Image 1 (cartoon, rainbow, N blue to C red):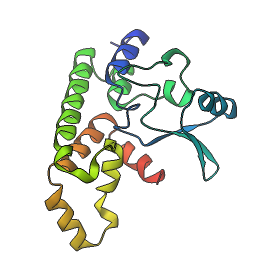
Image 2: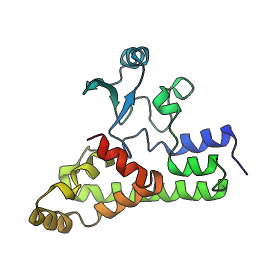
Image 3: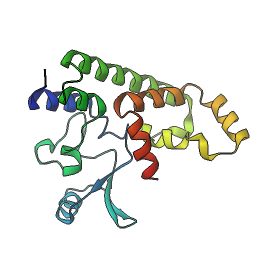
Image 4: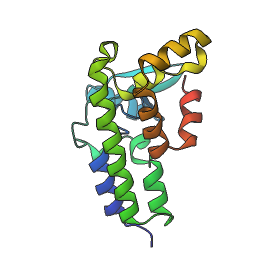
Length: 176
């Protein structure tokens, strides 16, 4: 059974990890008018390689979206992996709610672990995951980081795979 738009909206608003800096560090803006509108709302907009974007966490999100009904197209068109599965009928509402709860639990575990790591103070989960991307580091540095941040890296990776899947890894690498 496919979901209703109301169910999708309710789950989306209850989670908000695509808005709060958990999953993404920025969102791309496709339309110049939208760029101007978001800038006028006080959002941190910028151009990078001729692509218009705004930074995450979104200042319009504080536990709920202040502009959900008039959100930028990048926001209103985005569905995380659990919502995409629900939308196409590949997961039930109960399964999707469970996945969202799991993601919330992983996020709390991640954030509870961060105070033990002062260099991550004030950083979003996305920024921390980028820092922990060990593939670009020399092997001795990778080994040291794995020892220092052994708890954070798997939590961040699990969270990403749960909400974005492998597809998110490809997009994340493309946005670097």
